[in-house]
Length: 591
Image (tube, rainbow, N blue to C red; front, side, top):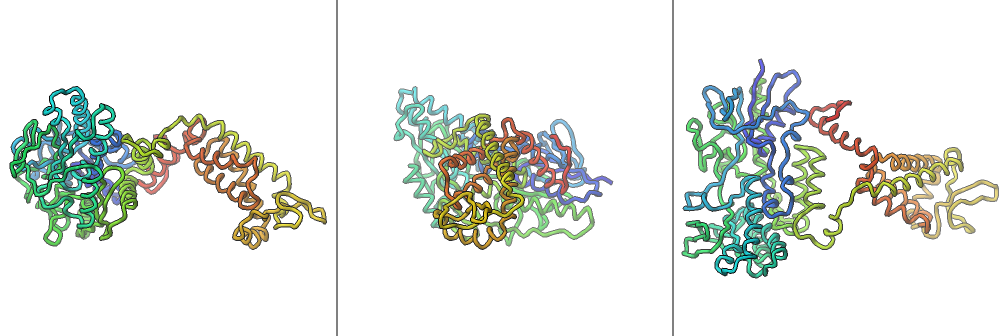
């Protein structure tokens, strides 16, 4: 009999659970997997601050569910969940009711306003894709209004931006806003000194989960470099349309409070039939099961106890609870033993704008450049797992090539993109040149007789004829480095014919690859290395220097215009995605 598994929520935990179910279920198991969400996309919640700060395009932080679950048997159901009947095993949507044998609740979290007067009505939370866009547009509108405002009190309100909450999200958000206001000040001709940025934290320090050294680094960067006022031990007691009031009696005039200071389990407050703990998070056992054996709770909504401490709402925790729930559902269906969850949290990374980050990675505090790179690598590792190379390339383009914020000098140049068809003439000429080189060597007998030789006293380089009348090619000259000469004398020349054949095949292959526009990126790397090899051997002739820049040009997608790569690369990416999902290839895969 078919088993129906519903995953409610397409966040980090829900996506992980659905993919794990599909990957680990056996071909002969009749299991119907569906994922239900109000949106048709998965949101990278940890990157929302980049959209709010206008560093990247909107689409940079969303991944369509159809891309994640392509080539899987997972059904995608878009709809708003209105309730759950745990006794009848029904998930209620506005438009229909869905029955299930197993339910995975992964609905995530919502902002927690803690009953602060005016907070829910007037703040700008950052918990969703729509929230991020709303913050971005609101800040832009504040600058536009301020540029026309004559009343200094109103102008001050418009140009004061406050973030409530000094945790990871709050610090990242104020860092992005600090970079963005510099651009907006230039655009609307506003003096930077008129802009006030404030970060408010109720605890004695920001980034409470990080080591003191990392906290001090972040504080120093925020205050001295980004000119952010950091107020700790400061509790917000009231929010009005034009001010933030603190417990100590201070009132900050502003029309913008961005709220990141608390979360509670989403959509579960009105569900009386399931046991909840603090902040409405659902109590689960060591297998991530609720009090109902066929209902699991994962991610932010799950109150998983680890040595007496509730697992924090982090991406790693979400992924691990999602995987555990999926494995245990399959174990229950098969009648085998369940797997206990033993969380392994490797650390956290916090970026403060584009050019600064702090990390606590397995107890290590990485230097600033490595911290920034590590954050990118962690994101790419996750994206590769859910979507393959296409999503990695998309992420790289948004974060590096098409970044919208104010750029460094070098970024302004490498981020300027031109159509690939301008590279076609040089691609064809490079291919023609390599093809001529390869054919010429064939005509000279490179496939038949070993002709590679060392240096001679009377000949520096190139082809020459010995006293016996044999034609040889000198590959060691006055410009040859000693280490390269050793390789040539001990490895290349003793196996001359083999290396000659390899060179001819490579040159012919490069010619055909460039002319046809096939695997142009790889061919560009090989072309560069082969030219480098020749230059180390005999030096670079005045008429050969252009091979180097031409090879580099090929790395810019030269085969995508009037070349086979236009069709081949997307096809191979689809094949890779299909193989990862199904452990086999499908020859005719057109979509």
